[in-house]
Image (cartoon, rainbow, N blue to C red; front, side, top):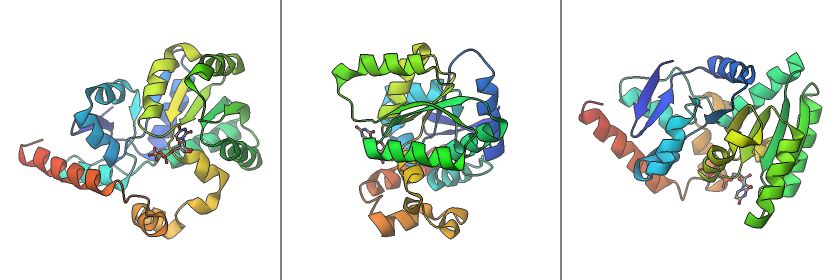
Length: 244
Ligand code: UDP
């Protein structure tokens, strides 16, 4: 499987369809697999944080989540075929699992009312998916062992973790080997999107790769991310000038 190096991480050059097929193949295997969905901010941070670069480097599938990653791959002359947003990957995976009536999922993360609503929406939209369980993402460290035990007892095939990045990646890296799920995916703000469709950018913005712009205007979402995004852009140009 071919990958492009962007700063210190390797990103898989996959389409959405290929990413879904990889996830389905992981579900056929006994061993646990980790899927990560880095955006430009996380890719930049990984360059400064070797432990994060290691977690991303060890993942079985690293999807090009976000317009920044797609653009960087083009600047580097080794383009990924398309953007594969983590939220879309998770939604499409639910759709396929529902159609095939296979696999169970566990949702860990987000606020209690959000994860509950997300589960409700999944039941409506994807009735063929079996929900193994859910838990919010605001647990205390001393509550974690019992939580892990309850996830293990629920025996999910897919574990969606939405604790914010990079905490969710570190969490998955630590617990996937023993938690029993076959596939763990860090999904960021996806449960919020599932809980309330209106949080997602309109179709025109998604199609034209301008979801980030829509979010700046609507939520000021990337205000705090702009400096890292600029640094990411400069670092990518630097990599290009040094000859990849
Ligand atoms: N979140 C959580 N526990 C925390 C912090 C965040 O469950 O201690 C959830 C938050 O409610 C949201 C998701 O993690 O559903 C993603 O958060 P955010 O948008 O801040 O993360 P990012 O988009 O930066 O990954």
